[in-house]
Image (cartoon, rainbow, N blue to C red; front, top):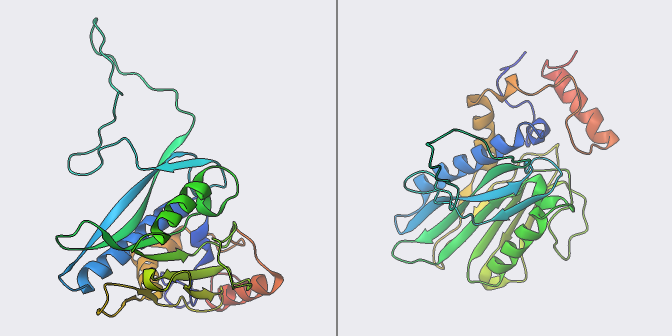
Length: 266
């Protein structure tokens, strides 16, 4: 067997899309991109890893979720919930709130210019809740997407999830399950779309910056491969079964062949 800790696929590893792994994978990919951009952008730019809080079921599940800028103070001193404390005259006791749902957190990246408040570029990595027709995750994300589209801010939207309905675009009728969408504010409504398949390497991601500066090109495939190996995802992927999400017969046959060649199936 070749390196057992290396990503066995030439591009996206579909086993990372599982409901169990994706929330962690999502935020780890964002962190890898954040580190790359922090290291490689000119000094005039700031790169911030922002957080969106979802109140509802886990965003990796196709179930309702509501996303909002939370009533939580997340930065700079921990988390402070408004109105969560109760005073008891007899003393303090420890109890639990009857919460049926889970609170989830998803990261995204904001690129700005030093000494300016307005963002230059927003980088989003989609999750299943964004692509699900049930619940609030899709509508909340589309609302934010529209606000960005009608602003002088670039949008980079990365889709590494096969299940669910892709984000709406006009002029592309292909069925590639993965895509990068690059929306430059000066050329809207035209966008650059980079669709790709399970069998192909993940394309680099061009991140637009201010006029006069070249795009920052993020080697997303290399970053994902490094993350997969360094975080030992091979120990958490069950290659004896097909991955979650839709697979065509051709995809299933190709996937089985790759895993046999790499020694993960016999």
